[in-house]
Length: 237
Image 1 (cartoon, rainbow, N blue to C red):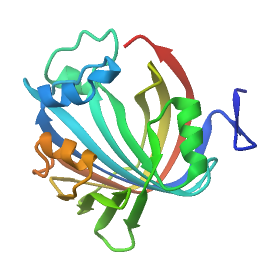
Image 2 (image 1 turned 120 degrees about the vertical axis):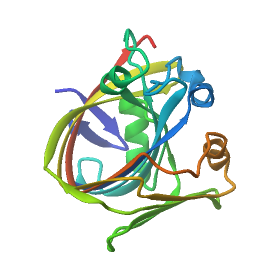
Image 3 (image 1 turned 60 degrees about the vertical axis):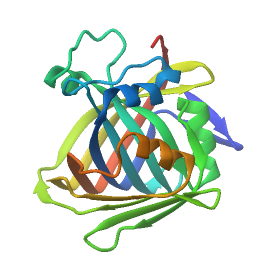
Image 4 (image 1 turned 90 degrees about the vertical axis):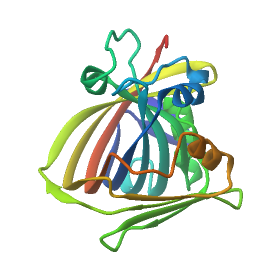
């Protein structure tokens, strides 16, 4: 069993999350600006329509897991996996994976673990999650500046789901691939369903240059998720 020593604690792989609430929304953005945002990684965005890419905003309340309890916010893009021959359209959507571009958290242990074990771009930020009402809200501040205020409106119930996930990261000049498993209950999905207010932080400016705020394609809320994260594998992007 692979393991890592993080802040004096041994963390074994796969890392397991036993209880979390996951909220996410997807926005169509122009492919060329999105491609420029992740150019440092050597990866390419998936084009679900010609000239259109997908930017995903995600926030998670980790209540029970191997990396303790913490809040997380993520900016990710749907990307073509290395070696893929998919072209713009549904094949790009089916065969795509998530490239994690920015992943602030509010606890140092998970920040260090995420960086060392998977190359996740984790950094510390103030992440205020408000999940007790039907509407799910996340407010992210970094260095005292507002990055984003994101409100999701839960939609129609969806069946329990279990599915594999693939994510890519890039850190210290290396692109990595991470396989994960997700089991979700209390799932709700709706077209649109997201309200976005951007602040004056550089990440907010980056999102603004992609065209946000705008109408979301789809928003999803998961009341209870269980996850497992396997080891990172170095790849040539």
